[in-house]
Image (cartoon, rainbow, N blue to C red; front, side, top):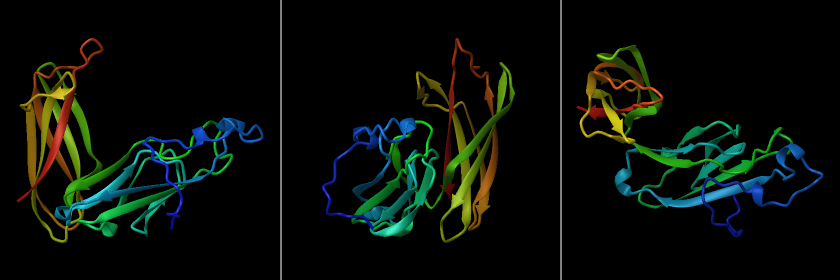
Amino acid sequence: SYNDKVNWEKIQIPHDWNIKMQFDNKGNGSAAYLPESIGWYRKHFTVPASDKGKQIYIDFDGAMSHSAVWLNGKFVGGWPSGYASFRLDLTPYVEFGKENVIAVRLDNPPETSRWYPGSGLYRNVWLVKTAPVHVGQWGTFITTPSVSKDSATVNVRVAVENKADAAGEITVKSSIYRLTNGTKNIKSVASTSKQIVLDRNSTTVDLAADVRNPALWSPSSPSLYKTITEIIRL
């Protein structure tokens, strides 16, 4: 558990508590002579009652290090590495329609790095809400096995996660848009879809689409495209 009686400092993430500590010339020079230590974070937030039945995740882009996470006083999980991103499933611990409090303990032991690593939530943290059936984290893999000035074949492999209690038919649809000044055009340049019967397990769906007269990327013309994947329950 965590001590809720201390005076909590309001901070913004990304955050490094080490940078505010006093230098110690007898400490670890590789860590800029700043003492590695233990720190806590907490945040109050509300999840609407209307979200009950959905999946709630928290994504840590970087937490230095040996993280341990509690939600509403219940241990959720953690991750030892401070350099790897990770996701935790908060769904079993969320109180929908009420205030929730998440607490994160980080422990950055001395002499664990040959450079200054900092301490704390030094990268972004995301609260993610999905439907029970959804595209998995990092679940879209795109390749272009055939590209010419006239046509480009785009293969889209989608990992579909099923956290629902029941099976059913779904349609997985991917639409490809060209970006102009970083903004996608209103109309897609190609789309592809497949209807499958999803059981209670996760699965992978392979899709393919052809883009006519593609704008080829080059340093002088860095054309980009964006793919948006939808899962439609039937």
